[in-house]
Image 1 (cartoon, rainbow, N blue to C red):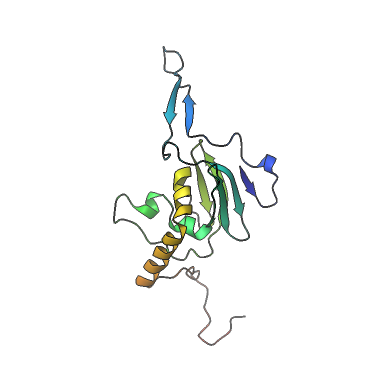
Image 2 (cartoon, helix red, strand yellow):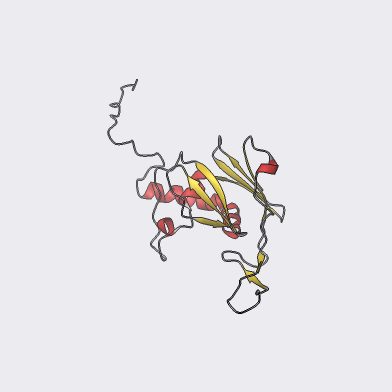
Amino acid sequence: MTVFEGQSREAAWPGPLPTAMMHSRARIPGHQFLRTKILLAGLQPGAPRPTEIKLHQKSRALEIAFDDGKSFRLECELLRVYSPSAEVRGHGPGQEVLQTGKKDVEIKAVEPVGNYAVRLVFSDGHDTGLYSWDYLYGLGVDRERLWKEYLDRMAKEGASREAAPATGQSQPKPGWKKL
């Protein structure tokens, strides 16, 4: 269930919580409904499924509890820089794009995608990553290692977590105070 700060549980997740399998009732012209179980993309069989998803907008974190009893608090910045989108991951090994300036990024919306993922809409306009349940679980399990790798790569490339100043705005000179 997705719960936003200040929102009731009843108004949260639209419908039942996700399951690892769904029943297909696809209609093929001239045939009866198909009644087969289909494994959903992005889910490993037997992978833990979320029981609760909360967006903490003030602290910029997504809290996810899973049916195996584990829960994780994932910062918006971590979710953004490890987005599963091709824009971030590239189209193959070695094509990853370092995401800079994401320290203050926020999640503006959490949208269910079928019964297997959510699409996160970020304040910087990024919205193309589909975060499957097993991907979110993996981020939670490996959070500390991934965070360290991100910070190490930023340092190695001389990049910053801070957003670049908006163009057209003057920045105060060192030692000066901007009023």
